[in-house]
Image 1 (cartoon, rainbow over the protein chains, first blue to last red):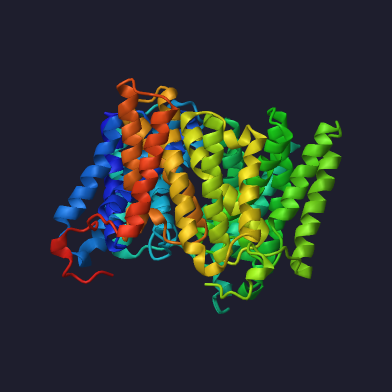
Image 2: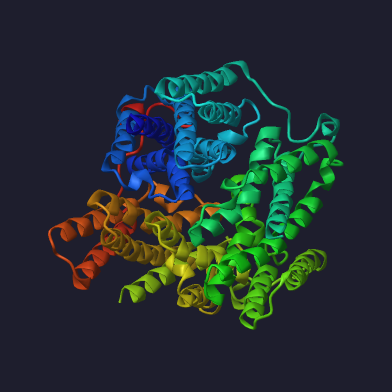
Length: 208
Length: 208
Length: 208
């Protein structure tokens, strides 16, 4: 069960990587590599911090999601104008799955709830951050036009809190995952924002 | 004591991250995240190489410096035009603290003095490098208008040399930290430079 | 013997880093640092995933290749117009050596052949990717005008296959290394390409 959800998260991020590769004019091998880096990135960082061999380098099945993602984008992508929206939707699904699974994995390894929340957020935002930095795009995580990390923070924190209260099991995890996904998608639809890094009394000053 | 200086180094780098986030127009969550990545980045790389769980994922107190840094920049930053200078000063303080503490931690883990110097420099420049790469800025480390890594190299090498001579203790460490900070700040004031990567006999050739 | 080839691979990547530093106008310290990051990058990622202390932080000899590379570019580089071609040639040599040695190291650590191939490719392309991301260049790995990762994938896969068949030894390894190098160089000369990430039926659509 955890393997299935982890592979699913890898797949969603991998599709977002392949779609960005398509927009950037990369070739099919570059698409597969960006899919792999986006899909594996967050999990590799998570596992290195936990001190275990990253799952993507243990189980050969992890090859499959980036391969399917690359073929899917190559054969099915219904036109380049529509590639922005699906990228964001697949990215949101990966974000939601990884924030839950990353927090659980950290808690199971014996981390305290604060650190587990931090690691959950790190593994959730890591893949997309690597994707955007490599493809030379302003990372989604820093786009001030919507909220990206806040749903992941809330989801990871909620999972850690439920865990401390003894409330566990995959139905709860799936519920939190769905909430994180919904919050992220709603923030895109409704342009939810949080205040800028500089307080409002500085906004008359010219930004560079 | 080491914990206090480590948290202080995290705080200085975190402020530099928050200030860059403000200049880039990120929101307050992006400011917190860039503060965290800048503050934790060098230490995470250092600890992964040493094979221990990164301190930021062990001790919940590490949440505090990026949070304070973000609030400080939001509430106190006295205007955006002046944000470049404080960014460099806070970054220099983080650089100085991390080059000393990183070298010591490597020596305590039993590394040879060469490798400990290398790891000290890596942990000193790592956070700022991650910050600049993520925020799409030419890394300070590669700015040819002043010196950045040289003070860290000198400081780490000096700490390793004193350690081999049996001269240890926090007063020495603090002294070296102050020297590194002073050298970095003086290089900014006085435009100290080192030669370009290509010898002077190539300078008539047009650079691309 | 493995140490010699590893140092040679570090040296080739280090030269490519120094040459890029020269083109970017970095100073000699930045050139040394970019040389080190390019030379050590792939091996550090490989060793962290394998759970061992990165070789560059164990053996002080690893200081030597980036130092020689930096001096070489400073004193010998015969003019800036010619810096693109040598960068690609040295990078290809590093790629070939690291894909072979990375796969062998993973197999010796007990990894399955699929994961060993993946780790070989990761360590082969890692250094160049770090170099290009840091110097703000589109990574060679994603340049659709030639093939970069394909020779590494073929080389790593071939090594893993030979290993499973019981065919080992440094003459075989050297042979595969030479084939990977030759394929990469031929792809540059002959403009070999693979299909774009988006299928041909989308090419009438305007790319952004």
